[in-house]
Amino acid sequence: MVGKIIVLLLRLVVAGVFLYAGVMKIWDFKHGQSATPDFTVAIQHFEILPYPDLAVMLAFYLPWLEAISALALFVRRLALGAATAITGMTAIFLIALASAWHRGLDISCGCFGKDEVSTNYPTLLLRDGLLLAAALVLVWRECKTAAPARDA
Amino acid sequence: MRFPHPLRLLLLLLLLAGGHLHAQLKWDAPTQSFHRVPDDKEIWAHYTFHNTGTTPVTIKSLRSSCGCTTAHLEKKTYAPGESGEVLLHFIFGDRKGYHRKTVSVTTDDKPTEPLVLNLLITIHDPVTIAPALVLWKTGQPATPQTVQLTVDDPAHVHVKSVASSNPRLLAKLEPTKPGEPSVITVTPADTTQKESAEISVQTDYPVDSPHAYTIHARIK
Amino acid sequence: MKRALRQLAIVLALALVPALVSGAIQVQWNSETPTSHGEVTLAMIHNWGDKVLWVDARTRSKYDHAHIPGAILLNEDEWDSLISPFLDAWDPDVPVVVYCDGGSCDASHAVADRLRKEYPQVTKLHVLKGGWSAWSGK
Image (cartoon, rainbow over all chains, first blue to last red; front, side, top):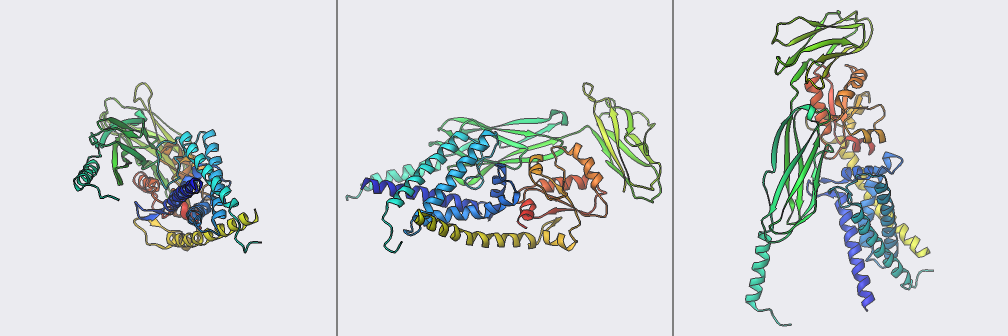
């Protein structure tokens, strides 16, 4: 019983964070314009992608993936896939963060649209690490749930 | 479930409303102006604030208008009565003239109304060269063109020498009366082909590290 | 495992649809909306036969990482040393188009304004609406 409540809470928190993060990267509410150019710049600050076009493609795709995954966490037939996607995204972002820290880049996150105080790596890594842990719990939970009768 | 006592509820509402009304940061001088010369290279401006409210305020983000201005904050949350400051660091680069740099400060009590800190700075070079570019089109007559070097304080600034990087575009300092702007004449040998030259005008100011100014000459 | 991969594929595909739609809309926006003073769109540049001198007003590190092919770097940080190479590349008959990040960046306007003021001989001077984002979204 307690386990179920904890998992529900984790699901709500993870979904909430990713839905917010996704929406903030799609639309810049403060200025009433698309947030994609800002997010493209934020991705480029990581100096990790081999081609600049990739940053633009990611800037268009990632926010929608975040938002859709967040919502899909509550759809029984998609929850496992959503949790897997979220785990993947969080893990990749952790690696990107660690890499940027190692190279001493000032990336000012770019996690929730455009917000900056000088990059505080330990906090960002901790926050992302916790999200990753929560996502893994959800994946594990979904795997344990009996597959629907129709699945082969 | 028992209904909460109406008076207690009212008191709670008042406290919540009052608390919300009183969460705020007061800024001493959100707009600051400076006059500097290019040699200063950078400026650190202090924007102090005080939490005059009854609840803690957290600064959520500092968004600067350009990469040349960075904002620094020691910590994000300030208790009632506490003071702090945002430090703005603006590096001039090769900028001259008037510049306005802004930093938007977003706090948790007013997430949709950021406060804008203004850094107004005039970077004044006491020496001006005009025009900065002398241009001929190929085939045009090779008439000399003149450039004026105007100085705020002619008593302290003098042109020591003028040198062109290309012998086919010669530069000469013309004799002028003291106190009058210096005049440099640039003359092409001919305009039969494209040429380029950087003409270096060496002054004796400032005394510890005298500046040289550049006139660009092109035949296009 | 199979279930996870199958569901993951569905989620990835579901997200692709709005992403493609929003991408197409934005690229369209950037090349067609009417512009404010001195701004040109990529579509207009195509009408000129794409013969322009691109000027990159961003930081050197962004320029080194990626820039419009043939673009010359000219920013206010290093104006004094970058202006000569710009003047060498400049041709009075070829339009100059300045760009920066796109979105809310104003460096391109700052560079264009300074060029207009100090080098009035550079007459065909424009700023790219949408900046680098408009170009790479192309």
